[in-house]
Image (cartoon, rainbow, N blue to C red):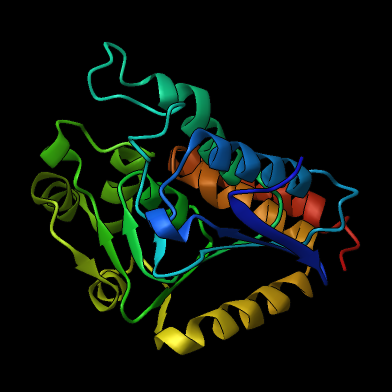
Length: 245
């Protein structure tokens, strides 16, 4: 499909996606999500040659969240405010979780609302020094979505998850790093080079083993201790029989 609201490039085993509506701070539209979903579909194909996915934004935002003015997007007065999540957002997050290639997210600026969920689906998350995370859901009569009620308590703990959800204060990149929410902070003009270098390193690594590691870690979010030992046993059996490159 033609890409109009994202930039997409694929070379050296890296699929590079940049949300590309900078005039609206890369607010997510149904079309943008459909284009991103098409990229995820390509990444999921074993014969695609893709070995790493890098996601960022153009301009001064990763994304300002869902575009509430989008004709195909959610309306705050709709009786079923969850429809757009079920139809467009949840499939994106599920696909990101199920990918068998590493995901790097590079947070080049503000990350707001549901787009925080996309950002946190990265295996490795880098941020510009000026970047910040914001969950303003309560201010517009919504609850956190984009898997944030699942991810945030697990990543930063219950107390901080409630604080972020209730008050909607900015979480600067340095504080997000301190809380263990992201992996590294870079000067704004160095972020993309750092992300590209990391993506290249991952693309040159053992992709199949990375994929098994992704599945094991994600399953560990939901499994009990005994079940996870069996996951490790079964995947290690596969790993020792795998010739990876």
